[in-house]
Amino acid sequence: MKVAGKVVVVTGGANGIGQALAEIFHREGAAKVVVADLDGARARTVADAIGGASFACDVGKEADILRVIEETEKQFGPIDLFCSNAGIGGGFDMMSENAGGTSDEPWTKSWAIHVMAHVYAARHLIPRMRARGGGYFLNTISAAGLLSQVGSAAYSTTKHAAVGFAENLAISHRAHNIKVSILCPQGVETNMIRGMPKGPQSNDGNLTPEEVAQCALDGIDRETFLILPHPQVIDYMRKKTENYDRWIGGMAKIQAAVRETFGKK
Image 1: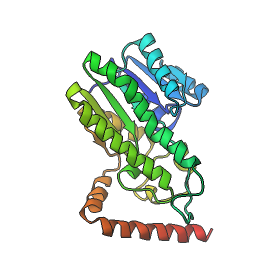
Image 2: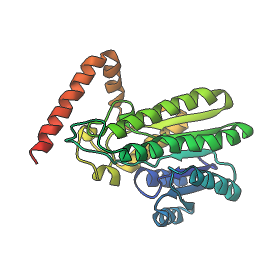
Image 3: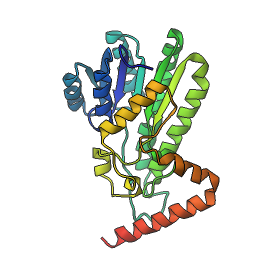
Image 4: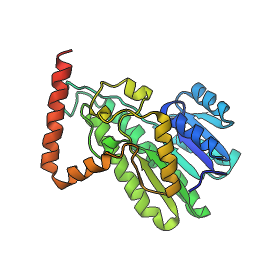
């Protein structure tokens, strides 16, 4: 799909990958780019710089997602591309002795933002897209949703769930001309990763948000489901599926090395 002339919504658009997506869609000639973010003031700054529009939005709340959809379509016309990009990096503990953690909080927050936000967008846009003959979802997930994430079971688990939902979304609505892409980078130079302990997600180098946005644009142009800004990930996926036990053993060694490193600090 070409984004020129299209109405696009980007959640989590106030910084990082979301901001880079908003900016590249504008440069490519989108009719209107709507920036939605929990930080409404920063979203407005990003939107103003590209002649877009903005909304304060907590993507973990269905009412907020619905409001963004309804207001965007009322003011600017049908949404052609909805980018569920918002994410959080909470719950990381490289020294954790229990994958189940000690509190529901990181699980609840991660589930709301990484999974239910995508569900809410689909719930309210699918009927509209079906009625007008098609549409497009870009869901920013993570390579952690394809592999795993040392240091945060909540992050890894909810990112896997996001991949599963996107797969089902694509399968269920292919016949309705509704396209789906998932954006699954490893390390990216964003506020999120700067707030995390350095881990194996950065072993292949951190990309800039602009590099990731360009990969996303190319993937949307090709209408490909899986967009991998770090191409090495496809090989890691193959190794995982070729021998699951060996892969888990390798990941456990990485976990042990990380614990040793952080235990010395």
